[in-house]
Amino acid sequence: MSLITTLLSLVITVAGYFSPWFPNQILSAGIFALSGALTNWLAVHMLFEKVPLVYGSGVIPLRFEDMKKGIKNLIMSEFFRQENIKRMLNEAALEFPSSPISSKIAGAVNYDAAFDGMVGMIRESGFGSVLGMFGGMDALERYRPRFKDRMQSVVHEQISSPEFAQKIQKQITDKTSLDAILAWLEHLIDERLDELTPPMVKQIIQDMIRDHLGWLVVWGGVFGGLIGLAFSFLP
Image (cartoon, rainbow, N blue to C red; front, side):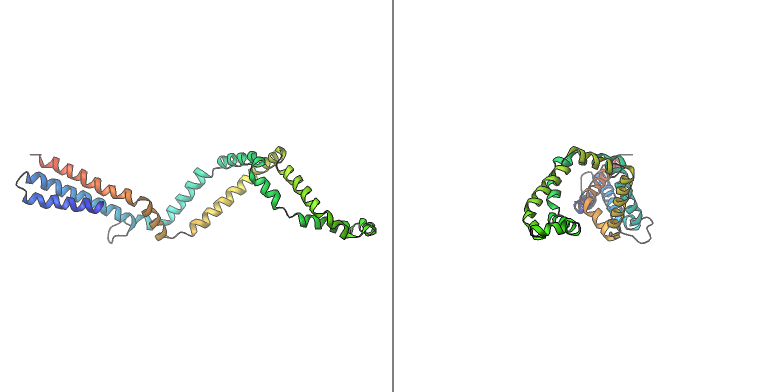
């Protein structure tokens, strides 16, 4: 797009030298359009690449650290403000009892370990010797499936209750908890930003805005041509 604009401006400039009709106007429009397209192309190029002897060129790679700080400040100040985190956690806590996550948590508990722990506690207590009269610890094994089903039902009822949601809401919206969450998020962002390098940032920005920057060259040629055409009519 920018190349076509530059070549078209060059064609108009050359045509101005040979046209028998309005040569001054065509030449002036072509020269101004060519200068506008070239200067805008150079400005776009200097955003990403260092040009020798041109101070301020290559601003994106040179200001890499400042850009990382700016990205971090933008994310933390706009997306992860304490009130935003608090509102999000409040909503999540209220929706938790009816969400599929509560069922998944109940299903993820190791009920076999809980049963083994209960059996171990009985073995170490005074009931261990009494239980030996009824077949010993092995007699409890047949109750394992019933224990697991009952415990899963109890855990699901507990974590699905409004009271449990209120307790979660109170804990996660506590200022200390919010500060810890924000500190963790900030640490996570720092880790991800530290993985970036100047060439990676340059490539990311180029990929995002290359097409749009091309229009700067196009409009530079258009407005330059119009300005040149207007100047050609001046006495």
